[in-house]
Length: 359
Image 1 (cartoon, rainbow, N blue to C red):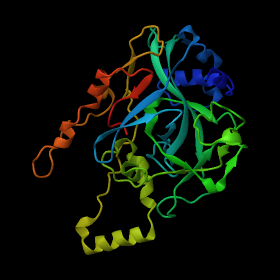
Image 2 (image 1 turned 120 degrees about the vertical axis):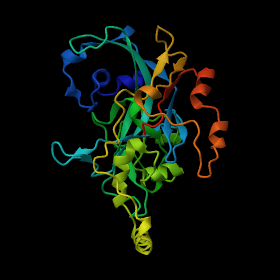
Image 3 (image 1 turned 45 degrees about the vertical axis):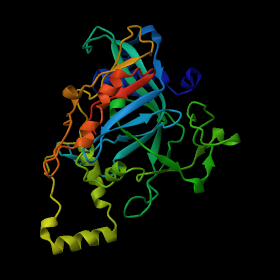
Image 4 (image 1 turned 45 degrees about the horizontal axis):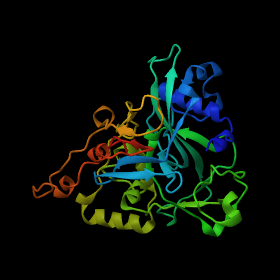
């Protein structure tokens, strides 16, 4: 892993920039010059070390207000979905999504570090525990028509080799793990990246193709019903991506629009309610909806105690809800709480992103 990290362009600079963006609560733009050398010098890695984990678990709220979890592993289930930044038409105007609202990345490594931040902008003189993941970015193929109207899956590909090919991501910004499938018809290519064992950890091929990438991938938005709603819109549990899913309201097939129109004309009471224009949903939690604590003061990446931080950074869901006829949802109450289950078990080399309701 260390040899692979050393080959990434400007790895140390990108790492310091990302750590600073977390410490200062700023967006990581991925630009090398986001912070000056003097600003990067205010960040010190204790023992000049970062610690790797094998698994990251992401908790999320499904479209029907249930708790669920994805397990991210760089070797077996490495692909994740993130929320892109919305754009405003003019300063002071409400930001909206005018293009595909999701970002896609392949996780190459899961890390944490003990960091000391000093200088005029420092908020603490004590070591701070920061988590981050190293990713290889996909780019959305704008030349390919996908979605409901086109009746085809969206298509993505790896960014060709450049300073933007790799980057760091705060685990809090991961919406879900996602399933993508190679576009087998397009074949493989070696033009996107030079041979790199780090960037190609997933065993997708045999023989000489291990140094090649698939030219394109398809986003499997039908892999489960929650993903269908994330590309359809209207999921009551998708509070954190409400603005993003509104983008897909315009992506309707002709048959779908005709069916909805005829239904509304026959029964005006079935018209879809309009959302208020001043809705401020869809923002990331300011306080952070997750916390992973390392009991080992040396920060050796051993056992991690997972702390549920729902009350600080995100909305908590009720443990049980009453259905339409007044009966409690026994299915939810019969299942043991995920957080309690985590506290009872020892998870070595695992990282958890907690805080249901953020996405």
